[in-house]
Length: 246
Length: 246
Image 1 (cartoon, rainbow over the protein chains, first blue to last red):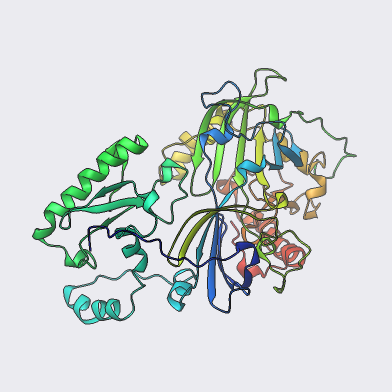
Image 2 (image 1 turned 90 degrees about the vertical axis):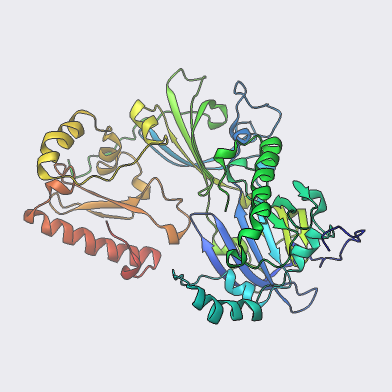
């Protein structure tokens, strides 16, 4: 299965985001400026949908001004288009609400549809615990849980089989034993290199977690590390020592 | 000075934010979606200006849909105005860039003009250290430093004397010994009650820090605590046990 079959595009659910109907807010993170919503697309039925909005981080070009380094052709806050409402000015301190040109108002949105109970749980506020998992605990508790209630891996196989996200692939090594596909993670905004987040998906399909790794996987791991560093350096101009590889 | 003199408005510097000229980016926080800039307003001279942008957190009304509790008259993401660009869809996961109606594109901006070297330092990235300050260290090192290089307190006196921000006052007790003014902090976006941030400024002018507090200030402290709780509960409907008072 690691050699791409002649890929036929998989049908994806098609919804109109503006017709989302809210059931409730799952989380609202006022630090990150993100919000997760549970609801439905009534036009399409009663299946649950999760919609996440997260405001985009600033790019240097967003705040470039005429004489600064960035090309002045990209949209910037500092144009006559900037709408400014003064909240107050006291001595040297001023507070405003501004609206930049519409090109700079975009927001990243992630949609999971149809969403399962487990997705809803994942996007809801929950208590977090730190647990030291022994090999015994893993065998008796974690593994049975993983086996019985894993998220569907359909999206992973779609990528490996070139059925979806083909044009997003950053690097591919087709070797069935040591090969992998590198591509942007769903969580990355795809815009800011400072928050770059790529995912390496190996062609081997029998590794569930770190627990399954042993000496026989060294060639695979070394290949993923080196080839990813090279590809990222070439494509994004990032020095390997600025990466966090987990 | 604690009784407001018949207040004459103080002249504030007047600049056109869109004519800001960037010198350099001081900090770019991709988690908080905020950016601090150093530059000038060339029309007005060569004084340094600091401009900070921080995207607004989500309000419930931003994501309200027809049948949800919030009044449908406030602007919402979910209208025909929503512009949607699909980045990719893979199985049940979709990623988009959306642009909501212009009413929901506003960004909080804070301007310090003219800005001193100390302001620039404050808004730049810096190493932070945790230090246990003994009374002796305070007397020998901290106090002389405070005395010699404090930020101007002009803005504080402007508030106490009703020269500026008068309309922003949330609560005022004019007693010269135990009185204070409560008003929104510059850092609060003024929109989301979840991030509510108010500042209490006491009329007494001889308290530099916690170090100067003693038993004689108990009436003042108790008054600030109780009157603030009451005012916040009345104005924002927040239960006192949900407040963090520092």
